[in-house]
Image 1 (tube, one colour):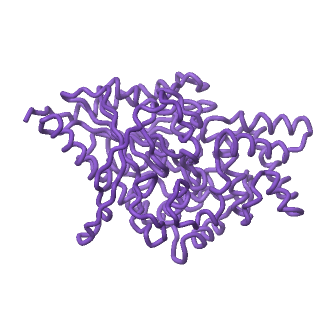
Image 2 (tube, helix red, strand yellow):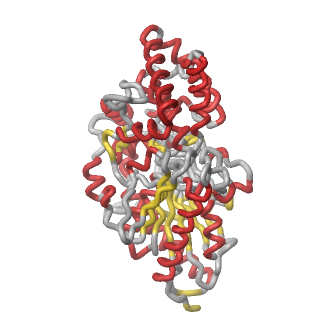
Image 3 (cartoon, helix red, strand yellow):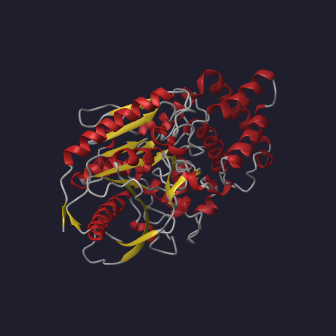
Length: 487
């Protein structure tokens, strides 16, 4: 994800695991920079763009407007006679191909085709060239779910025509983070259109004050690293009170005029290490500096500039509300688009805890609400109660959905972590298991070919959960398969 933002920068995903912007920093599930690092052809199964006409407003009987929506297909492993179709959902960022992660392994095992649909408004699938607040009124998870349903029918009909056959192939949906939530919600709302769903690191619970997020970061960091982070934050605020401009410049973020934006950047920089399976990248230099009596602020500034803004690829402008107010469609529009979804549907406000916090108290609910108002205008706020009533939150009443989370991932506290008979929930436990480990392997900030789990501190834990997924897929696909007949 070029950057995947957290939000509320959800970190919640790239977006589905497809080659898209990382998503969830700044309101996203995964940082938007991650998947843009896919340059090698071996990391992508297919980049060939395909298009179809999508309905703009699925809820109006009068609006017949259409827009072009981008998608991809991968058929190398497809068993033409009766193979399943795996739909990989793209999320809050550009979708520029089908990444070669563990889904490719599953497709080969099951003889499946893979198709991947870009989320409306993101990447090249925008209905408008101007992203004014009014023009964003069709951007929602509800519209996106209907997009998937319409696309699924379109693709099945096209495939039948191409292969001169009738009937339906068995379908299975996949998603990570916000797309993971879409995968679960799709099975909930359209159970007749998919045999089952994988909801990986799926943020199905809209949360207003998401204090559990930082609690998990503290637990994942461990006592020593957590203490170093908290002391670092205290020292930064002390220096900031004396000369804010000097401190912002030290971190390469002088352009962030709003103090809350700057402190959000600092918090996200720490979060990303745990969310994407690189805890030692952050903890080792901070703990070493603390034990040696060196300047913790300088050590953290080096980490932020070298790793978060450097090799990880985050752009400081992601946090700049001036940038978020830009309504011109461009390659960085995902920042504004995801914040709109955050500010209207899901919140995921990552706020400082009253006690024992690892982030500045300036990052509170008021900061988020002020951002929503400043960027999108009066009357924009996240109606999390309605979102949870509509989908059920962690009490989602679906069936044949596999929920998988990872022990170090703070987003798991917005996911379903308790198993039920027809919706198993699995937790992968290991030192560097983060967002989407089941499909992406370890770490997730650089894509591992075929989701290689060997770099996970406990590869056996990953493989065990993957085997449990395969068993559920095998059962559910067999239960809903129906023979196709030649035309």
